[in-house]
Image (cartoon, rainbow, N blue to C red; front, side, top):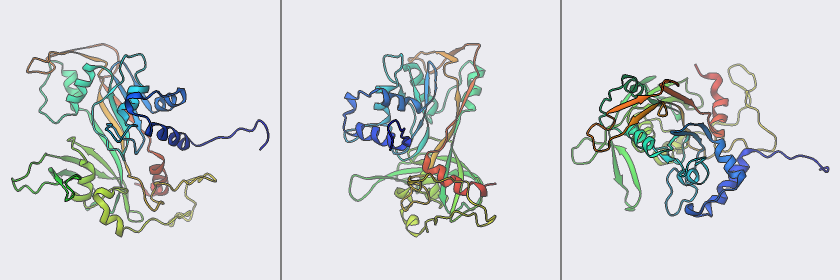
Amino acid sequence: MEPGARIFLPVSMVEGRISKRYDTIPSGTLNPNADEIDYLRRLVKYRDSAILVLNKPPKVPLKGHLPVHNSMDALAAAALSYDYNEGPKLVHRLDRESSGLLLMGRTKESVSLLTWLFSDVNKSKSLSKAWNDACEAMYQRYWALVIGSPKEKQGIIHAPLSKVLLDDGKTERIILAQNSGLEASQEAVTEYRVLGPMINGCSWIELRPLTCRKHQLRVHCAEALGTPIVGDYKYGWFVHRRWKQMPRVDIEPTSGKPYKLRRPDGLDVQKGSVLSKVPLLHLHCRELVLPNIAKFRNVLNQKSDNLFPTLSSKPDGPDLLRFVASMPSHMKISWNLMSSYLV
């Protein structure tokens, strides 16, 4: 190298360095430096007076506990408070291994309202028709790569879920309820749509959860559809053992043309994708539509039977907010390898 030469490092190396640092720091004493704050704030896709929307990377847990220090709630409290006295709070679930849009409330009022929106309780109507319509239009959409292909190209999965304890007495597992009446179960409903044909034993599908249950999409894919998500070894281990890994192919078999995927020299771009021997989970919260909380300024009365009896709205801004998040690198590689086949 010559004096003055510049070296460019991939973002993944910076992420790894930051993650390792947080692994050694108790969450109550996080004190990120300027570079780390800048990295965390680059994850933020949207911010207003009521909410934060982030594109969560995979393998980052949401809620911290004793063995976990680099959880999303701890990082947000340390680096994403901005001009507020407290950091934002989590309002919905996103698995540690999955990625995508993560919504957080910035005030107590918005946290209460968002938690209510993501709950599965029967929601009472307010006096505002615009608010009611916005709540009805709210949805999440996930993209997933699954092993195999569902028999039907689209449909609705109605499959209640139950929680069981494995033989070790510690590990919990979510399973499809047997409807025996002897076990507690929760209603779980998911809409799905196949995005294209099966390629090398895999298919891209779109998932829209209509209920919010733990591991709902993973269990519905693995057990209800019989097509576990690539990288989901918890619910699809036996299928993964039989699945033949996609070979490294640089030419499309149909057209004979090179794949559009560009492989940077010296970087292991196969890591985590379908080209890897051990792929990461291919489940990504890609799209989120929700009411504009900052616009609908609610008058809360916690003692009332109606949680939100009256709502006043500012004249400016849309009633709905829509966000779309790009996929993480391992899913982009898998997508680029197979996207030319999608219909």
